[in-house]
Amino acid sequence: MLQSGDVSLEDEMVRDRTARLRIRQFLATSGPVVDPSGYATGVLKDAIGYSGSSVAFIQLIATMDREGEIAREIRGKRTYKIEGLGVPPTPSAGALAPAEPAGAKATVAVPGQPSIEIDYKLLAQALIRELLVTTAAAQEAQAAVSSVDEDKLQAERDEYARRLELARAQLDELLGQPISVGLRGDDAAAGRTTD
Image 1 (cartoon, rainbow, N blue to C red):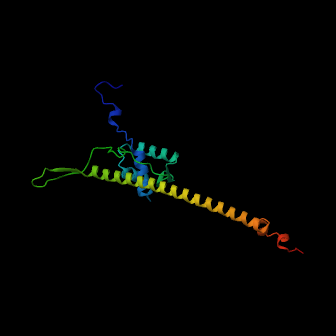
Image 2: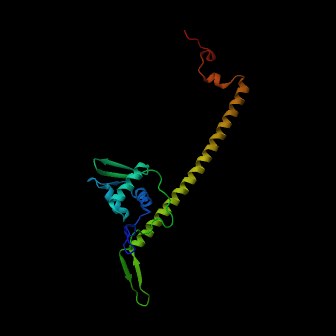
Image 3: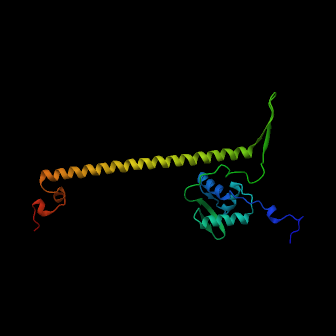
């Protein structure tokens, strides 16, 4: 039993709530993770900067596989390939917030100017976030444009079909019989006999 001075297990564990989104975005932008030695799960864990336990990450990957978000190539107890399925999600503004304290920092000092501290990890995350948001917006715009193009193409097809039916009706009036009878290949209509 925990006493008031004890540290609870919940305080020690950091819950990574953006891991699923980061996994899907990583796989969408970088392609499948392939590891010939069978440690693709560990490679993916390191690539997205997952801060939780390995067991929790493996459970997350297994859940995503069951739900059809990813596909894994497993032989025995090893995972050789993990690939994303479907459309990557559109990242929200805070989706790629750092899950752990910032790392590499540098201070830039220019004479006569105040010094600037640059956190390269935060800078890299901000650049990746901007790339993902821009890419997602471009994909949505392309989908909207292709939808408009498909609608325009369908309208043109409908117009040509209507005009073709009108032309056939006019030809039927002129010839006195439907065109389809002559086009069927009927022997009687063609004046031939089959002996």
